[in-house]
Length: 154
Image 1 (tube, rainbow, N blue to C red):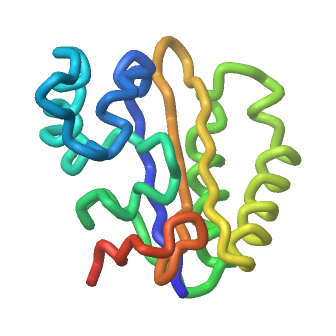
Image 2 (cartoon, rainbow, N blue to C red; image 1 turned 45 degrees about the vertical axis):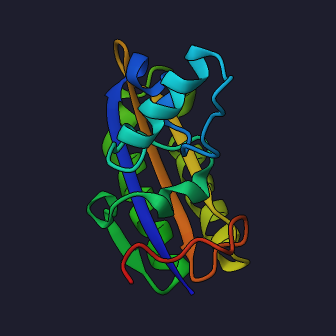
């Protein structure tokens, strides 16, 4: 078992486009409404290649390997990376409470604990203006939430 780290920084309006944050799913039928057909086409074209975070954390494993920011065998190492990500962006977090150092340390420690039993971690913060920062740690080989997903590095 190992863990992959993912990070995304972008406009909140891009993050809010749920159609590109969901895998395509089953193809629409001939009688499906046009909006369902359009959403399916958009998901087929964009989900596999966009770096926008998926709605389900485990679905990061369906993204190209180029979206991986790091891979660690040990949960502690992955948690350290998460802590560094939080520390780097904390000065830009929208609220003072989110910037609290104790809170950030607790989040990183909780992530290590969760990874230890095979869970995934996904955090997001609004930054100054309309920017959103997302960071995730995904357990791989196997993933507990989606054991059928293969490692993107294989």
